[in-house]
Length: 404
Image (tube, rainbow, N blue to C red; front, side):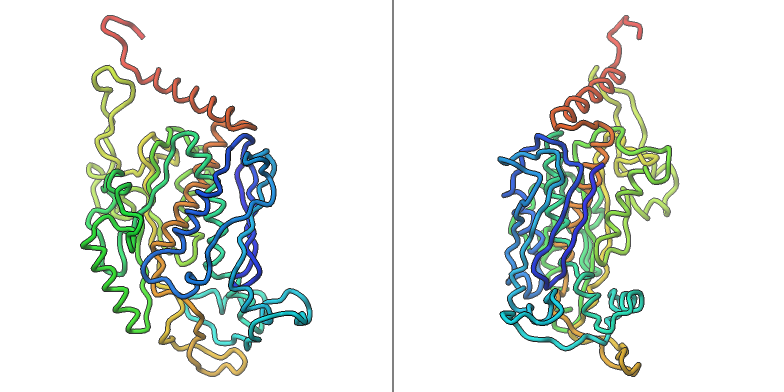
């Protein structure tokens, strides 16, 4: 089982992630991990915090001489902004003598749409900062670091995970789910919103600018696409082993994600079955493999991968911190007051898409290790190749005159 835990606060000293279940023998490329962390920090509409941080994960354990040992992997991501928050976020009972930064007043006005109020009521906190520091999306940097390791497991089996932004506010791509992978690979690295259509992207940028001027925020949608995924990951035998359910839970756990769809998603509920289900046709030209003219199911049927691309979409609500705050209540007086304002973004959909890639990679890597288990990456690869060969043999048409 591949699993991970994260720890740390938005303005604390560092974020920590422990990733367990990675087989021995995986050559870990830390530069690729850094590249993913930098992508999470990008995208039009991000706030000032991204200009402060320059995320890089330090490997503390589980790797020796660049190769995983099979032991839990520990990663540390320092917060550069910690220097400005030591007098507010110190772990010691008293402020350390050498602490730097300002002492900030308690936060008592919860933001509608954030974890502020629910968290304060659950844990009895008088200062909502005890909630918002951990509930902050800063935590997702640790997930991206863990996901970067999972991506490298998948890469050994030639599985690739990509994403693209399909909508910002009410500006959306038409028929986004049908966009071919080659177009996704062709999105320029410096794309402001990582959208396949430059014209639509400019309209998205204009919408973000308008929201910023109004002191408002915008959400949107993105799609995650995984290529090279073998058939047979997941299971239909138990509710908690269905891969579509595992993917949905993983994506819904990302901050501000409010909806998840597989393939056509909710559009499938509006169509007749003849325009939803993907037909299955015989092999062509003697080549192994059945033919699926469409992939409306998003590569999953009955909770199991069917060999097609896995396509998952997610919808992100607008960020809860508004520069023109909504009405709220001061929890010390229970009188009406404007919601607190914390440094934040206008739009973080491109960043959420990178986090989505990480979560999908972690779920798929877990499913790969579940199906092709082994203590070493060589064993996992051997089991995967053997399973692929068995499926190919079963789906290879018999030669003329041959009985099977």
